[in-house]
Length: 175
Length: 157
Image 1: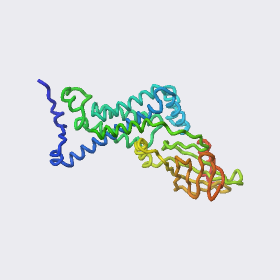
Image 2: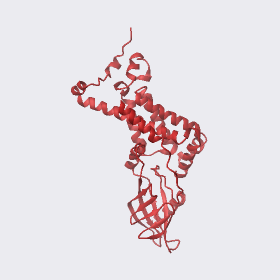
Image 3: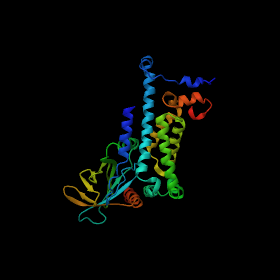
Image 4: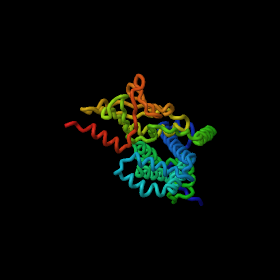
């Protein structure tokens, strides 16, 4: 007998005209959040493709980016020490982590697969960008945007998480 | 679903386009930096070394920083043409003064020109135009620019 998760069925959304007519505000809100999730995924996909295009994974491009940023920062700031002692010496592994991480976020949020983990990864990357001297107000907006997909069960509303959660109800990856 | 596929393909193609050739500019400004302070020292033709204008291109405002998210997304579909930075202008002289704190500098990313109130600066050679050639501007190293700004802000005793 296949186990059935009541939590999973709570979040089941039926994408039909009848469902929109029955609860228009709720369905419009859910559709809006799903569109935001896809845009967030698109943002990360473009960011990762841009890094590929610039050759981050097989050149010293990121070292140049960090060096340029060093000149822009206040010499006494923590970010300068962070870049000098961590960012610049380890630029290549960082380039891989960031690029692969952004691809993973894009795939996770497009597919609704491990959605909350994908959102958490995006937030971690943003935190690292902030610490690394790239903090500005856009990170606040991006953080709030990403937090939506950590807090809400959007992978159950649309995506593969719903199916996997029904099959593996104990797994935290599909919640 | 078909439309999404088309959009993704377009985004992929746009992102893989070759980068725009980087020109060597006398006044390079990073249009992607939203938290940068840049300092230009402009001297009129024939003016003494102590007589100059200090242009402080300040970091973007909170909402302009937030709006860079859209700039980032949009650059995949259309080339960005200009950047805008808050501008404060200081005049040197026997009594240093702040000329203006509320202006905007508009940077033309194609023509490499910085439009300031009443004129413009050519980023390629630093020429300062205001009803013809008025003088020359140069980009100061940031520590030097900050020090000069501090000096101009400190009231004369």
